[in-house]
Image (cartoon, rainbow, N blue to C red; front, side, top):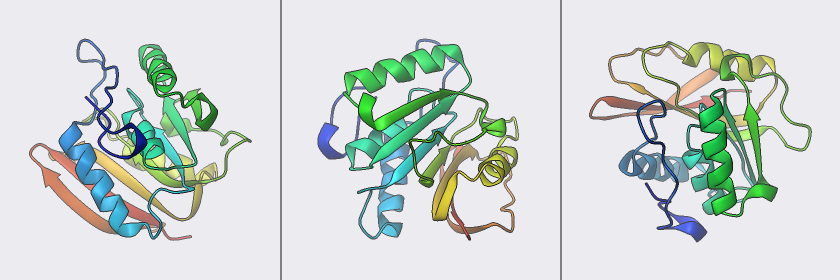
Length: 186
């Protein structure tokens, strides 16, 4: 698995052994970033990114490679946190990242040193119906900037109903994976 674009294009990320962490494939990640670029007037420049259920941190680190101001990488699994921290060090992004060991469905307050997130990636374990709860937690804890884009990765077997606070702006299927892009309407 590698970084697709930006200053770190082509560099490899550490990936887990086994199946406890399911990283987003390079092909899907590239498509996600192409979709986001079509909605971002100035690309990722100066954006704050939150990567929930971060696993390897690949989505947040990819955004930093493409010019994001900072990334908040959130996971509740100790092995994921260790892997994220190693990847952040490999890419020398310690100053631009904040790694949180938290449950994304009960996210709590955003770290004081960060602004609200302009882009949020949600890639929870498939089949656990965690999206709606995680989105509600983001709203309740005021993580989202005005017009924030949220990218949701889930199994094509699952369904997703967009709440009134969001507008669905894009959806794509990649084999057994669905990618939804929604926009925060506040």
